[in-house]
Length: 464
Image (cartoon, rainbow, N blue to C red):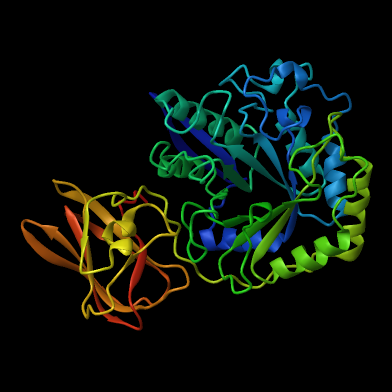
């Protein structure tokens, strides 16, 4: 058996990480394998299971977490009955309670009456049924006060240490689904907790582990911003387009809430037929894997009505094998945008769409050139001193691909120098190049089909 040895830097220690049988795959191969999985079980099970709210009191006591009949093998058999191919468990949700044997905090299942590692029980049970295992992890952590404008270096260290535990103690994890990070409702930016650092940590621990962030509420559907897989939450109004070409995930609960509620045993679940005909089948045809949330109750078991629905789904739907081949997508954007909220200048535009809308970190706003301008341009000042960068991403306004030909330049040593001449007509235009140093960047638009409109102009210095 082949062993792949990697070295992980954690503070002043260098820890060797061994991944049994590791054969590093290309990102496209991993994305294709993910889409081929087609259908899986999301398992929201954590301290909110024992409260009326999905977002409970941040100081809810570990003593309330007390399942009397905890049985992960029941969950796995239920997933198998629906012809699901994997599971994904909420190892830590927004309230910060860890349901594994963590050394990072006392706020965990190990200090509850149950006192046993549920992540361990879950991965063992699902693997026994031949199912792949994934984990969900929330960056937002209300118990540890890991909230917007309150981030400390100790928070970042805790996140990294917890991810190290999850990706070294439980064998191969097919994907890590991240939540509560740079979403409009969580407001923890990729700068406060550097996405690139966490992404590279995940890949150093398990190169074949896909990392996805549930950030479709903010980032455009046409490119992979801060995720290996485009992820959509249907209950939040995020839906996959029939024209989608990127590897995608869509999630939805079989009940009305993500976590178990007292009404669940008696309240009808969603129709198995509609789950198949309106979710699994159409989503699979759009390169999208569907994950159905099934919430265990306070005994640690799935209710009978949900079990019956899963069996019915298994009668109505079978996994017929690999899905359609996905397109070769650009590598994900993973580093911080150094152009965000920096001084901007541009050719003439109406006041309601001036230049700073092009780098305000908001894809719903945009700089719009005045219709009379024949050669529009937009310029961003990165800093007073030269900065290193190797990628520029131009995102046109939603639904637009008007810019046909353009030039990118950078300012260094008191002169403008060329980076490239582009003719990418996609809405999101990603350009990677050898590292250069400059303190300004500029796009000059030479040809367009209609008035140019740029929602975001990003400049990045990727470490990969």
